[in-house]
Length: 349
Ligand code: NAD
Image (cartoon, rainbow, N blue to C red; front, top):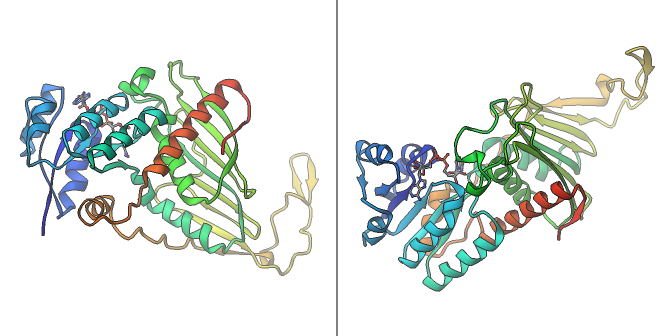
């Protein structure tokens, strides 16, 4: 079996994760070496048993290298990708693919001109929590879904690196936002009519330390996506409302449940004491009116992202992460920034 020989540029947190956790398990790929501008990361490459090339150009000049993985700060992706594609290498870049949609359009044109493939590591399409949500969405055991809330909450602020700086592509829309928006656009069919957004700057950085956005799909479905970095108490990772029930996943440990309306015993529940008053409206449904169900299993995607890349390069297979989908997410992020700064609901598609 033919193996694809890879080189890596940027051997920091995510670059070394690819090497340690992903590429090592992929029998169709072999990593030859890489380049990082930091001498200590060059040493780390050598210690891990790989070649540390003296420059990026030296890495690109190696004719054995067919695929370059870019795992550097966001503002560097474009130039590194363009140089690699013009050197006739295929490219896999970390997310966000580029700083904006225009950059990606330029890079895709250069890939086409050089007849090389360009891929983006939108790995969270493979997450088990997301696969479970996809199953609930498609099976409709809680009826047609009309609202999806997707959140990630932390309390550590923005990590103390390049993610603090606008010029380097910092901020949470370009960080976790890309993942959550990619998942949503992959899951929900149809156009988004309008976009509302609030960006948070409470931690005093020049980039957003979190945001929430509401996407209004033309089919009537509403999606809330929220990223927070000053949430000492988290809200659930996922919360779905269907016409016949509700589902939630609390966290990445996949705790959660679905509650389904039975359609029987629908008599209005008895009023309950609520604060200093009574309520029927907010009383819990009677036991007979609902049933608790475990979360379904999430159906895994057929192959890993690397296996898919191999299929595309070697056998002209179908992509799981399509570049037009990546481009749509970048366009959406631009609208989110604009809607946030203008404090207006803006049309999208
Ligand atoms: P990092 O700061 O830990 O590592 C970046 C490395 O790139 C550093 O070692 C730095 O010295 C090196 N570098 C910077 N400019 C370079 C250049 N011009 N040439 C060569 N090396 C250069 O950052 P990170 O957390 O590893 O993030 C890297 C990329 O991975 C970002 O685009 C980020 O968004 C992405 N990322 C993706 C995921 C995911 O789940 N897909 C998770 C984390 C990070």
